[in-house]
Length: 249
Image (tube, rainbow, N blue to C red; front, side, top):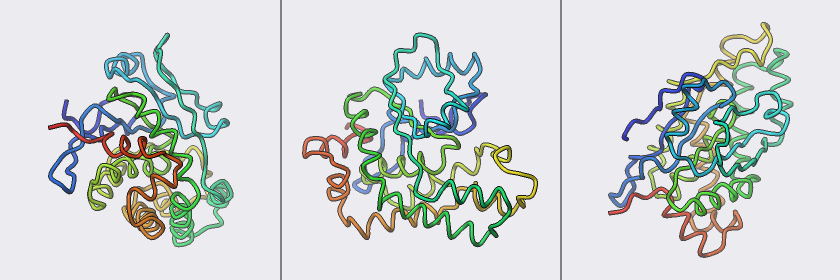
């Protein structure tokens, strides 16, 4: 399979991270890691499609209350290794309340989102360590990573996996921006007082957002080995992490 986006009915942003070029001429492996938005509305046909992926595990970056409101719909007796690794960058919920109340302009929203993206490498690298460990444990079997829209927490997780495989930052930004083509409608989370421009600034996958996060990651940890170590991965795990997405041969 070499399709980037998988055609699910109840999830709009399910994508394969395979086929991206690495700096040394290699490629990322297809059917190794999938990124997705909410799985709460999967149809019966989607459940069949999910089973056909042969997933080893599933990483859910949503908080407990997010999962309670919109629990994943998974195949009965799925046998998946489930990892609930929920978190939100500091101040996110305050920002969302301010957006919902119409108190932030698009310019203020952009500044807040960029601040939150800087927090990913500053404060949340350890939150992604379990994701890497689950994929190492999977030993080549596919894993799916998701949150609500598949843009922010999932987007930075995908960026880390691609950077560990030595995919160029511009390619990582292009993968991030693909969310704009497959965007979940999140207006239900906000009131009618929220302008279209404000909602666009908040929910769009502006490439600058992920560039801000990657720039901060590089500032703090110029070498991949450094940020993998900052996650808490030991030497063997760091070696495995760099091979996770690499195609063999």
